[in-house]
Length: 137
Image 1 (cartoon, helix red, strand yellow):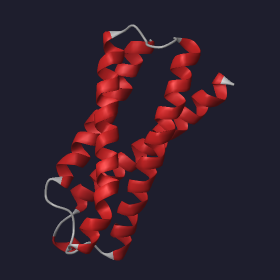
Image 2 (cartoon, rainbow, N blue to C red; image 1 turned 90 degrees about the horizontal axis):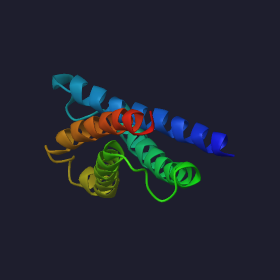
Image 3 (tube, rainbow, N blue to C red; image 1 turned 135 degrees about the horizontal axis):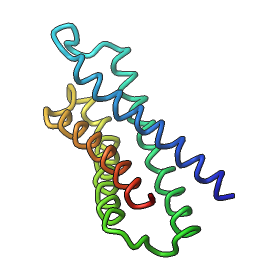
């Protein structure tokens, strides 16, 4: 049973990574040819946003099951503590972007700080994965 949960956890990590990096690639590709974003780009942004939301929910659910199943209430590791802090930051960013996206779509697009949220989210994701390696060997 834990093997299935671990497989779901890793698949959610793959999908979350794709969504995070996809948003970064869209940000890097933005330029004069992208004023305002065409329908295809907007569709990609929406898919990435929903993919990230679904992935982070699955990661939390499966991560908690794995933690309780193998370690108990908490993993005694400083790396795990920092990993959880980055995971909370990443979750907050994903929820904020999903919550505000419909409003931004009606008002002409997201504010300029959103691109920094995507970069912060991607950095947080990389830190979560790296710290998980240290926490769980």
